[in-house]
Length: 267
Image 1 (spheres, rainbow, N blue to C red):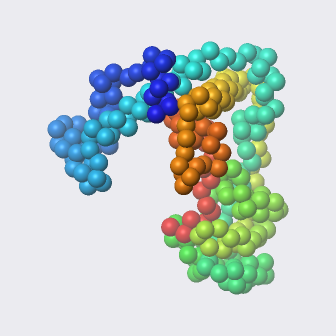
Image 2 (cartoon, helix red, strand yellow):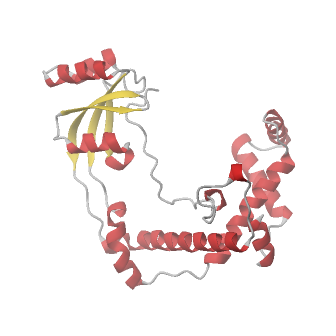
Image 3 (cartoon, rainbow, N blue to C red):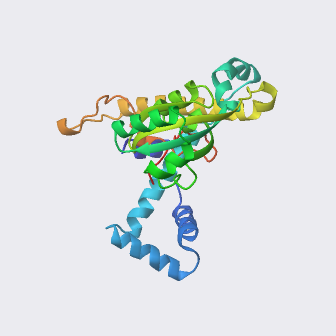
């Protein structure tokens, strides 16, 4: 409601035709072309208890937030001097990270993991043990091999163990939501530090986007403060003066995101 009010104040809106075009593109991408695709779409909506009009309203709201974001942050700039100053903060993200050939075994209990780790440290063949014991269906046939992986692709505790052990050594057990993991670190491909001149354009994108997000967050916080928002006791958030995450615009394609997959996914 606050966003709708601010959009009206700032003259931000999205035409029905543009909303319809966006929804049509989505239907085409998901279900194909032709009237049959729209019929399928309407049927799916009915199955989940919603309607096309409700979806149109959701799409409109998202598009209005995007337009607001552009309007609020359009004057944000980044100079070459800014890039030089910000480079150390982004250098690790922009460089090529170290990668390691990792193998992993997942079992259901710590006792089983301890036994396997002892067998491996005693000289047992990793691939053979993995094929016989791992509950990870995705890597069992490959003897537990995960391939070359960087630390930022892994869950933090597992990454710490995997990249903290010398190449060729067994590490673990490490617990995650899929079970107890015992791994082995293999060949190491050293990382390559970022070169300012080579990553300058990408650095500009990152700094610009982060500054825009920062300004947007402050604008949202100020808008809520001015919006006379009041919460019922059962719905009061921990920090009612902070903008809710759901009020953020969608990230543009290509925005770096870290969603680390679990090693030995048990799938």
